[in-house]
Length: 104
Image 1: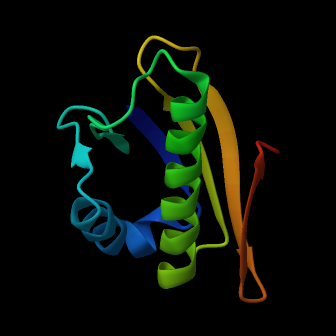
Image 2 (image 1 turned 45 degrees about the vertical axis):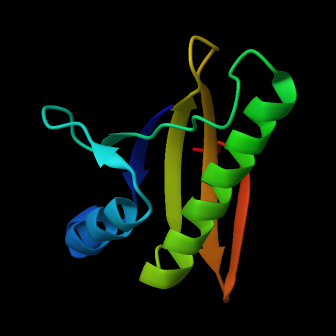
């Protein structure tokens, strides 16, 4: 699974965000800014229900990151196996983290 993300105010929280993702077992790709990979060996990428669970887990992780680091917006793209990549957004305002469709 590949995750690419843009964090609002990234320079202010970059080190903390990198530490957060590393603690969640994501591996940063060395030559690409804000690109991470993770393996989900317990899931089969050919099953829609498993892919849905992966999307849910990633959204949950990003909402926790936004909350823990007080990040107002994270725009992200994920690709599960060979499936089409999707864009989503996590927002954190007034103590509530939400995941939704990508909005400019």
